[in-house]
Length: 405
Ligand SMILES: CCCCCCCCCCCCCCCCCC(=O)SCCNC(=O)CCNC(=O)[C@H](O)C(C)(C)COP(=O)(O)OP(=O)(O)OC[C@H]1O[C@@H](n2cnc3c(N)ncnc32)[C@H](O)[C@@H]1OP(=O)(O)O
Image (cartoon, rainbow, N blue to C red):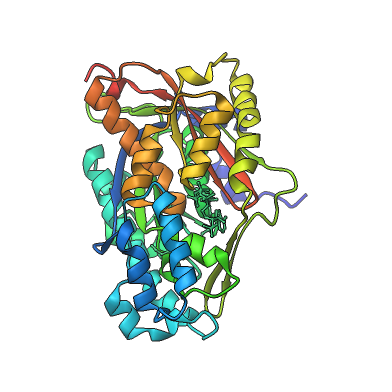
């Protein structure tokens, strides 16, 4: 053992405190709680019934009428009415190479998204911080999730600076989690908030399809399905334990969180950055695969905390990956058609914004609780899915800030 220098020995505390005591003092007393939510979208809004015309025009693909009809058919059945996006006529005029995935375009795409995605996240975060009611410098941890982040220093650094966060804010980036990014970020925020007394964690998810926007190709149905479903948006949540009475408003308590990987599902959803933009695959059997796994995930989660839950008594914040996913999950759990109204509303108004969508759903649920005085369900489940295939489950309880509105 190395000798202890005299100066270090002199600086040692008089009373010996065990690391167990130090650890106990660091832990929060209560559960991680959602304290504020904010959302934002880019300006360009395309109605779903005009999307096929827009897409085939800007990608100069009118010579493929069968694919255009297929996109129209899927758009009609998508349960989506409109979507927001950064891609518009100006972007495509400035970057005609984006229309052809075989041309090199990743550098140009990264150049754009590494600016606009953190800016969008800043817009959503600023709303969350304003609602929270405390200064941005009280944020202790930042978790930034996006599939557009392929650069260092990353969007988390730009976001922290746009918001004026303290230089000691502890930053983490989650990348390429796709549609389970929001669920993963919230789970991580729960761990941080409960294990660091006084921590206030800003979760910011932001997605832009610009990184993966290219023209249609015969034989590549993934492109058509992606074009029919996905949109751009950002959602931000502030999570902390032991809310400060007069200032902070507990919206949802996070009682338990878990992650599960669906067996034999590795190739079902994939994403990979390539020279012509982000390549993705969404297998045809994804809705069935999720519907077949969801009940086990819920039973395991409620079993772990010893709560006997009846599915139809819960409130639901489920990632609306596609209309059929919500239909099959409702069927698998024996739920009424209205159980996932918040997810369906977000799908209708924004499409699938990948990892950020579940935050929009949480915001919509909050809106509904405020509107009806938090009548009804006390317990609920947030569920998000993505590549892996990965299922994130968070058990929620309505917070005191939503009761008696
Ligand atoms: C803003 C714009 C720009 C966008 C750019 C794109 C950028 C995307 C970038 C993001 C990539 C990230 C991906 C990774 C993350 C995924 C995470 C998830 O959400 S996981 C969840 C991801 N979401 C899902 O998994 C979507 C779930 N699916 C659904 O919700 C529904 O199936 C539906 C709405 C698509 C169609 O309604 P439904 O009642 O089923 O109607 P029908 O039975 O009548 O079929 C109509 C047509 O659809 C066809 N088709 C169907 N599926 C697929 C497929 N996978 N594949 C190909 N085709 C498919 C079918 O063959 C038929 O064709 P046709 O015979 O007419 O020629």
